[in-house]
Image 1 (tube, helix red, strand yellow):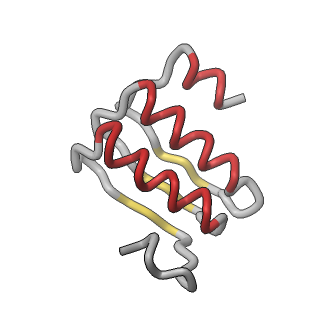
Image 2 (cartoon, helix red, strand yellow):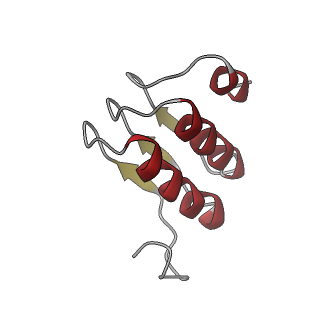
Length: 86
């Protein structure tokens, strides 16, 4: 639904403990990267592992002009994903 609405400019996304995991967050990351309007993201405790976290962090980089808060704790952030935080 988010991807279908081309006029939508999402500024905040919150989904805590929703089991987004890699598949869900990767799909959302594609939308976030296209919109480039995200200011706040909260996705704690979603079982996001390496591939999902890399996709999310790449998408957040596309939102660097607007992004103010990132809450991604209790997910997998090490190795390749940690390097994306720089």
